[in-house]
Image (cartoon, rainbow, N blue to C red; front, top):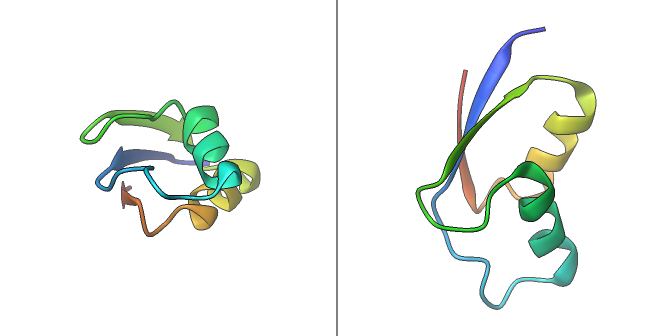
Length: 58
């Protein structure tokens, strides 16, 4: 599988606890922080949960 870059573009303030924990599990937590992950089904599912807070690049 390929790699994806995930960048947080919106704040986690006033988000549900589940969304905050998902961002933390992805290695995010501050705006403009970027991490690179393998595009596994687990990671893609986590990104789908917080897609309104992040930007995804292939």
